[in-house]
Amino acid sequence: MFSHLPTPVLDPILSLSVAYRNDPRPDKVDLGIGVYKNSAGETPVMKAISQAQDIVVATQKTKSYVGLAGCEEFNQNMIELLLSGTSAMERVAAIQTPGASGALRMLGDLIKVAQPGTCVWLSNPSYVNHRPVMEEAGLKVKQYTYFSPQTKQVDTARMLEELAQAGPNDVVLLHGCCHNPTGADIDFAAWQAITELAQKNGFVPFVDVAYQGFGDGLDQDVQGLRYMADNVEEMMITTSCSKNFGLYRERTGAAIMVGKSLQDVTNAKGKALTLARSTYSMPPDHGAALVKTILQSHELTGIWKQELSEMQQRLVSLRKSLCQELRNTHNTSQFDFIESHKGMFTMLGFSQEQMAQLRETYGIYGVGDGRINIAGLTEKDIPYVAEVITKVS
Image (tube, rainbow, N blue to C red; front, side, top):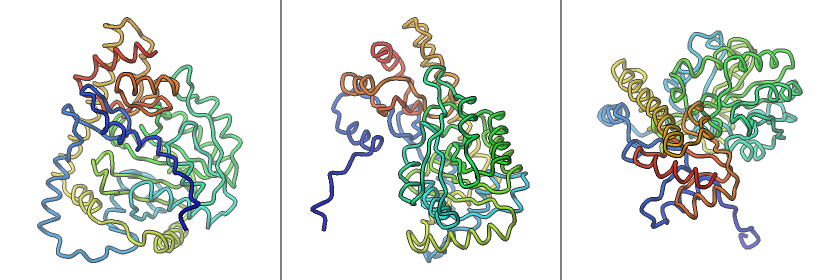
């Protein structure tokens, strides 16, 4: 059965973690996989999560199944976190999924059933999992320009020009705050323009949100999303608690459907539950139980928001410190764009060969397309990383 299978291609990001762990050099730096690390280089359990965990352990009386939709209180919490104050609150439904990747596949499968000829438009570049998930769901995929290698910012004019070609049989997948691997975010004016195109041309927006709170703040980071939800008839949203709750391994996410009416999204949710039954059946409970416990407690919500704000501010500080080191010590402003980016990621503009040199010669691990994870830096790493970036550039 298995003898004819080809040798698998290594995942371009996850394989970096293995190579990093096997690297014996003491000054190695892991800027590959997108996880937040503190000043000690650790990915901590958030205090709010620890306290919620104590509450869940003390109060949970059963390990029985949670049901196909997962925890409905968690689902409502995720809807409110993203869409509070919008008209979409009256025509929305959600199901809990095994992480945002599970939500992507769930909505991909739902699109295939609801409108089999759909083409999904993905940004270039995009999250590494977007294309394979949509293609495995049986959907056609196109790309639209997103990032300018020259300016290191969103190429808004070209993006809008290309998205103007999307029509009623298309879905346009957009990145929420800080999610695109470039570190460059769509601004509010672009959200408004894309919304206008969706209204005019009839395509359905699909927004992937995994870093709410890592950009400018919880509400500021979804300003464009909320505007869109208020002004389109239909849209889809995937969301993850991996980053802003630090629940990476708990695989805690949700698939959200906004429709023309509550009946429409109730039907869509019912179909999604049928699809869930034929794949993973039911999502894991623990992460969702922790998030629900936090968001239903005023005290724990306050602790969580403070921790999230500190993480966001540290990312801003790391960007500023790296740019200052490059300017002051190495007399180069070539990488000043790093300071204007948001969230964890930045695209250095390095070639595959330059990224290989960073890794093989200097022990600095980044993704081959030029992406580095700013959150992988510790303050003590900055002088070394700045020196090596200068040498390789």
